Image (cartoon, rainbow, N blue to C red):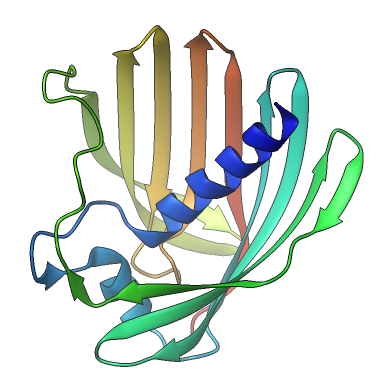
Length: 186
């Protein structure tokens, strides 16, 4: 169970950093669009903490743009974590973010309830800099789980993620928080 909570947290962060919405067939990928605004060497670092199944995991992830072409952005992810007192540094992983692509597959059953979603804007201070953010709040209730999440994203930050909070109750209680701890936009 410990491994699933750790990997789930890393996957959640990767999804948040890679896109806010799925691109339509041959449409511009919003994640690529964000990274393409910056030069190679731009980076962002997020620190987070998640709790699930009685295990608390602290994570620090650094995303660095290592390649940019008209067809793709390549982002290197370096992750360090402490899961229940066990510290580990994961090998660096490279993620290719295509400039365009087909729509992502369905994420749930066609008759699944639509999430309650609200959007607004807010200014957040990160490492002494004020950053204008798009704020998205989502509430879902499906398969015995009630989930609430709130994310702050900015076009001025490599990768886009500034802050995220999520909580779940039901079959398993879980929570996670991530905050941008630093970035360099080249």
